[in-house]
Length: 372
Image (cartoon, rainbow, N blue to C red; front, top):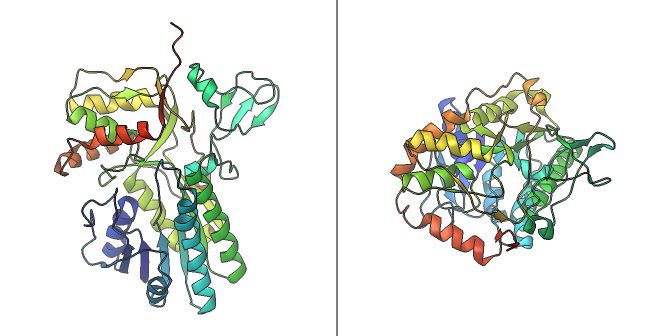
């Protein structure tokens, strides 16, 4: 099969390309190769045997030219950042999806499958249950609440304690521009695919971990931050109280899921959570990383938080399990792979300081109000 992979020089894209080529598919990669993921205008990784086209997924002529030679598409190209570039999130993450289907319909292309990358961010704060008022979908925590050091979310009705639930695909409650753009891309792709007979699947990834996760992107997750700190000999900071829950999924498990939905017709017209299935606190993840690097310095709680962070989220992965997929690797496996790969990357000394300075200048990293 001839397969186009947008964003195919990035983290999830390159690993997926590796396995597609290994299975005998003809793979074409379209990637803009831009910072912060790629430094110096060079792709971080390109699968041997794949054809690379360096260009913007919003370049309609280029995209159309590649789609004419394509049987299936994995659409991973996306914009991620803490910057308040609301129009850019929409332009890259949503308009590119619309253009893909627009070209396919206008030129009557026979696409056998389109797999669109989405994100757990589409679910926002996720699903909670109040013992008195039932299921709740809370909104983003106000800054005045966070400044007072109140981390947990109360029931929107009674402000009582709630239980964190595994969040199924039916929940869509995005709270930031990235999550909104990803949810919009899901809706657009699935409905246009259904209307015009283009078999489409959306994959809502949890926090993906493993080698090739961008070292230079401030948006990248806790494994990167903790690993860089311990590699460079310092103790990382835990935002809030270190008890925020997340589910982490290994990159190889993600690739297995991506390949599964390419061939399984039961996946058509649906969105799937792709997660690890188990919730870990950020403190627990920091401990896994600390032990891997053999450090005696434990992560520190300093009273800082990142405005806009989700308190707790863990995806329900039962739908994908029903297709026969299950996560096979643990966070320990992911950290071990990342720790082995990280020292091979250049120019690491200033990465943490640059990312921290960028988030502080944008007002993302903030401190609890002193009562002294």
